[in-house]
Length: 111
Image (cartoon, rainbow, N blue to C red):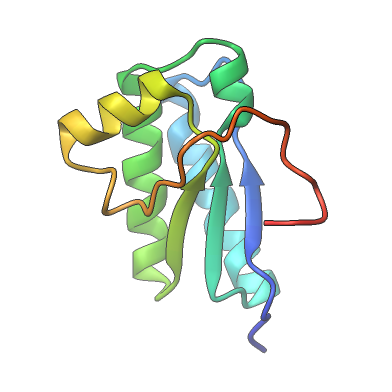
């Protein structure tokens, strides 16, 4: 069964590299359960906590790989300017379909 609605995964701060394998396992399980065709990684909590570091980059890259292996598209929603710059520096901004921070809280009913 394929779901039309994207699977929204909200990443909580602080995010550490030690959490990444568990996040990937959780994503894989949720994709199998929901059949979603797209994943939206909501990183607004990381922005609010001021976390824009290589632990986040590692997590985003590995989550993208997990989604790709499942044949699912992925994008990042509401990164702060620091994370956008870091994603651009590492060449991941386009790959992750980064939607820049719009300076507001996201509406939970809208993607």
